[in-house]
Length: 243
Image 1 (cartoon, rainbow, N blue to C red):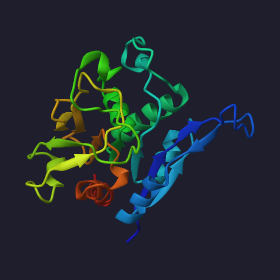
Image 2: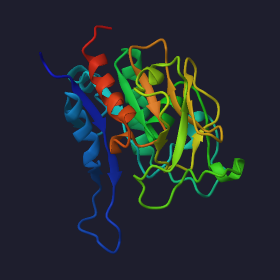
Image 3: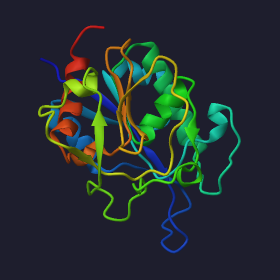
Image 4: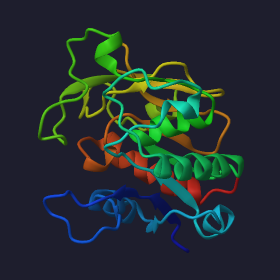
């Protein structure tokens, strides 16, 4: 049986002034994203930015919107920048928002990770908290110090959800890493919350109306839990089902 091809969007990076190789941007992606797709039985395909999104979607079976070090510009959800902590990359955001919208319209399986959760929520009309410390005083540091991959706080998973169905042992605490300073404020249309942090911050969302539309605020590509591994396996399995 043909392995599903999973498109993964890329970050757009530039050399620092100290280590400048050439005055041109370059694409970047941590290797773990592609490794997780391969582990789950898919073929990863890295997606450079393009206006020909229809052709891109014609050659992939599923889509991953990964994390990144920059924020979705609030203009994409109808707000102005209200925090000096907001760092934007409009070229990346425009590509990911438009590609995600078209993928959802096709009912293509989509997995969002960290930034990807925020992109999906924005696409479906939701909004974001621009800087968590400005709104919440929490015992959880959602922008944890290094190492960023280390699990630091528990999540509470909704049992009667797609995410909940991927939890093998409901009695075992699920601890995730936390490397974000933004989070969902108003939930996008058609989305439901499938996990929260103990302080109430939304940690996962999904759409019951789609074949597979699920996003997590933590970095599941580090495979800290069985749930992380199951997320990628479910993405691949969904790509092999007819819509």
